[in-house]
Length: 77
Image 1 (cartoon, rainbow, N blue to C red):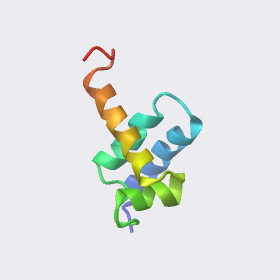
Image 2 (cartoon, one colour):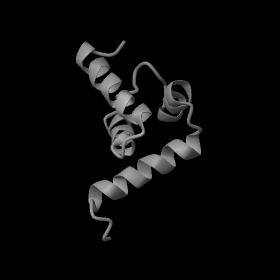
Image 3 (tube, rainbow, N blue to C red):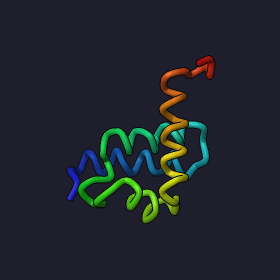
C-alpha cells in the first residue's frame, strides 16, 4: 500500500491528467519519474492502462513529451 501522502499526491496529479490541462503531461511525468504508481501497480504501463486507459506506447510518448517540456519550457531546444 502506498503511504498516505503519496496517495494524496498521486490523486492530485491524476486529477490534473484527467482535466485535460497543459499540466497533464507534466503530472503524468512526475508520477512516472517519482514511481508514485508503485507499489499499487507492478509497472508504469500497468498503471497507465488501469487508471488512465493509456496503452504503453501512448503513456511513454506523453512522458517523453513532458520530459522535453521540462528541459525546454519555451520549446526552443
